[in-house]
Length: 267
Image (cartoon, rainbow, N blue to C red; front, side, top):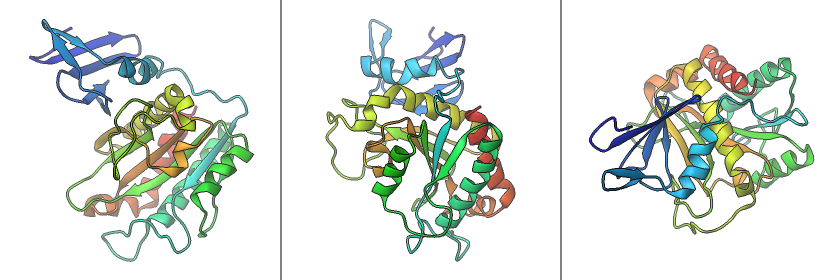
């Protein structure tokens, strides 16, 4: 149905999907997400690209279905570690690597209480090569891989983001240099499940943490995602370069909320 001059909405039992002609930004039940291609209109009728129908809309229609857990194993990947501190907090000598590890440890307890076997790519402050993180998930034959991070920006950005791999044939939401949009990477075999996992986790985090929504996004450059053989996402739990969010991230209470948000999404 038309809900504005160039805006349209599709309703289903699992929620409402709203798009606008000419923009890649859409939303599902008020949650921001990014399409591969801006919808077009012909004779007043909106057309969604076939890739977005299959890779974006279809997983949303099953968002209320629990994630698959045939082995009940999840690998949690606290970002950075060792001399790689990740983002430094605007508040002082506090680093992403420590906050991410604490988030992962809190989440491990909650997931184990829900029947998952949880493996951490690191459980202390030590360096772990990106390739080793992927190999660890493969060795454990994990059902899911979730990488935990905190964000940074030069100015003004705040809120939660969830990333999965860009499907072959689509342009990415976030670029770091030129990309081949037609390349098929190993994790592209999980496109549907990646988006399904991303929407469940992102939705639950927004509900639990109450943070601004920067949306579900896609990228190809993230080494911990592109060669995974299982559903895999990367979550940014807030901006350490934003003074208000850095204060929140520094509190155990907020990191517990982040852990609870992810845990509820995997129930």
